[in-house]
Length: 281
Image (cartoon, rainbow, N blue to C red):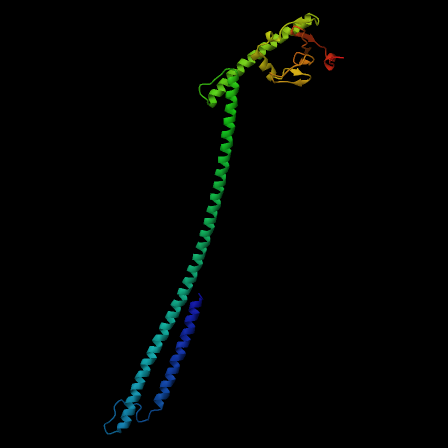
């Protein structure tokens, strides 16, 4: 398999071989320049010229030095090739480590960003829930206060101000008021029958003897009473002597004129008469 490192090693081997061949050529050239009588003779007689011996010794020393230098150059070239290979390998590893580090940093940044986004969403959700809980507590307080006030109007005072206690007391009060409403309807029916039997005659009576205070409230809260065509639920609403009081459920219309003795007279009206009012001239 081809790789950049093998290509580099091949180039270095070619360069080393070239350097080795150059050194060999130089050595051969130096050896050829020696005298012929010095080549090929390992031993020289004492009778020869001392100058030639000195030249021979120098040439031999230079040859050995050249061989040693060639070996050192070859070793240095191999070492250089190894160092270059190690350098390229380390650079490759460093590049891979740098890429992995950058990738890890990007993953860490993305993870931190996602965590911050999640925490921000949790904080916003917690804040929304706190606000909703506060609104619910306010509504609960208002509801319980209104229920306690309503029960207090009817003389009911729960021992414990809890939701279950209020619910039970309100149910009990509702049953009582419903029974009173039914009783009131029966009494209204009897009054209507009595009024129809007496053919619109005037009867003197005081209103406070017709219904009690607690019996009037359920009738008003059931939208049973209309004054001048408008529903009235206020138990303290003032009624003038010419106001038309109507009870649509029983189809009864009447006015409440009173005499000089401050006694009220129930005056029944027909449907056409409810549209007119008397006035002083």
